[in-house]
Image (cartoon, rainbow, N blue to C red; front, side):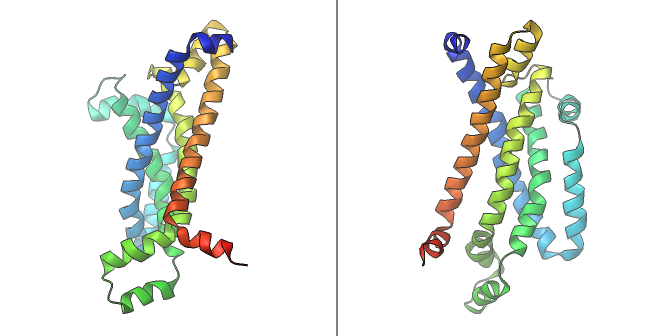
Length: 215
């Protein structure tokens, strides 16, 4: 606790960096996964290649991907863009199947009712199908968020500033205080991401609260 109190500004700065490196890819990955998941659901022959193919991205070791990114992107080894792109790929890998399955969980009669009311394909997707798929997509997003918080810490090995630096600092000095602070910080961040996603999901699905309140 004493070490933490003496290094609060440093810990807060690393925490903000961690939030940025884990949160931005989460949003970018979701935006990319939505059309890919829709295509996998809309065109059935694409379902297996998309879900399995993008899922394979998650099997690439994070450290190897962080190291490969500068050569692919033409960036410096310590550029945060390397981590952002790598983490976005991991997020897409987790969410394409989730989006496809979420859209697949939409009741067919709801889609047909929307069509009967004159909804075009685009309007039906955004007004009916996507909102009804939110609970399933949210579950996958929560997994991706916790995964991102964990994997980002690996970037400390190549010197990317975030809470993972506390692990390497403590390990190099055989000093456990920063390691403990880093672990607690990652746990709290994962919990914060999870609660935020739950809150947004609750706000986007008011009908579930109404249904749950019925006797």
